[in-house]
Every structure is written in C-alpha cells, then in structure tokens.
Length: 269
Ligand SMILES: [Zn+2]
Image 1 (tube, rainbow, N blue to C red):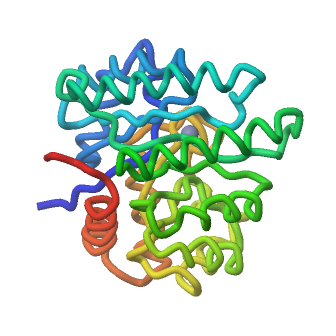
Image 2 (cartoon, rainbow, N blue to C red):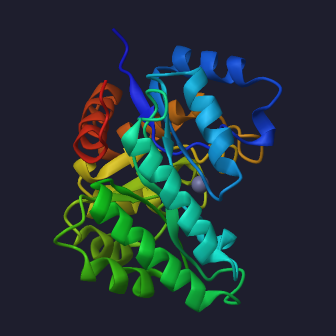
C-alpha cells in the first residue's frame, strides 16, 4: 500500500477553492493525503473553515485563532467571540467537528509593527487558551522569533505543544525553537525552492521526528508548481524532497511525520 500522510496547514476555505474544492479534495486523497487541517485566521473565516470541515468529516479538521496580521485595535472583542466559539465547540463538538488546535496565532512584524503591542497581548492570551483547553498551538512567526519565544517559555511547562508553521529559518533558529520539546516544525513548499537552504540545514539540525508536513495552500506551492495556486495534493512533493534530503524512504517520512501529528493533535480517528 502507498504511504498516506497529513497536510497540517491548508487554507482550503479560501476564495481560491470556491469553484473546485471537491476536485481539490479528490486529488489530495489520490496523492495519499489522509487528513487536512484548516486554520481560521479571523472571525469571518471561522464559519467558512467549519463549513469545509463539516463537508469532509474525518478528513478536514478545523483550528481556531486570530492570525497576527489580522490583529487590529478591536482584538479583544474578536478574541472574546472566538473564545465563545471554542466553548461551544467543547460543549457540543460542533457537529462532530471540534477544533483540534489554537491557530493560526503568533507574531508578524514583517510588514508592519503598527499593532505590535496588540499582537503581543493577543498572542499571549491565545497561548493561555492552548493551556486551558489542552490544545496544541499552530504558530505563525515572521521577524519576531525572540519576542515569540519569550512568551512561549513562560508557559512551556503547561503547554501541550504545537507547530511552528512554515519554518524557513536557519540551523540556529531551528535549534532555538526545538528547545521547546513538545513542538515541531511545519515544513512546506519552500523546501523545494532552488534557493532554499532547508534541504541541507534540516537534516543537519532537525531530527525527522520533529517535522510535520504542510502546504499552506493556496500559498507557497512547491516546485514544479511554484507561483501557482498550491493545493493539498502537492504535499506529496514536500514529502518526496524530505525523503531525499534525509536519505530515507518516502514511507518512512510518512510514518514518522504521521506519528508526530498523532502525538501533537487530538484526533479522534
Ligand atoms: Zn496559514
């Protein structure tokens, strides 16, 4: 049997998929993708994410959080409403579709520091949700690793774990993140880019057991689809490159990354 594997980060609720989502899911299944995890990024994306997950129960799983680039002056009201949704999900697991992670959440100072202090406060509050609800964090971090680690370390003992999604850093940055022992790196299409140093840096500094696969669809499509719409089926190309970089079989990458996902995420099936 061909190995199956998991796309831990895909925005399949987006506009980009509104015309052909069933085809996208069919191609993902054919490529060997056994599950996809969908992060909400703001309040308005929650119903869209849940809608996809309810259409594909046992295949698409929702995550909830306020993405750092979406943090505005009204962040406290937004988080209050998100927390209500989390509470509801816990009371009656949203029609068999409970949230499996807090995310995507984090810090992003790449484009703007306009809401820097709001981002810091919103992130810390959502880190506390991860502790309270015993859910892993799906973390987005850009140009803010020191600030991010400063917050995470405060809750290190109590946190159930999480993923640093779309990791593209160097060996030293990988080592710093992985000092948080219950966390893994989310690796996607960037690994396949010609310019990427990840193909050498990951095997040199990151055990395979600390990696999970992702696409970040519709963004970050791997070679040979670079620049086009990404979709979950393409996570197979990330898996193939990881197998080459680590000098192991694709089946081994699938088995090891699946085990890491099972350790981190509360999946009932
Ligand atoms: Zn994302």
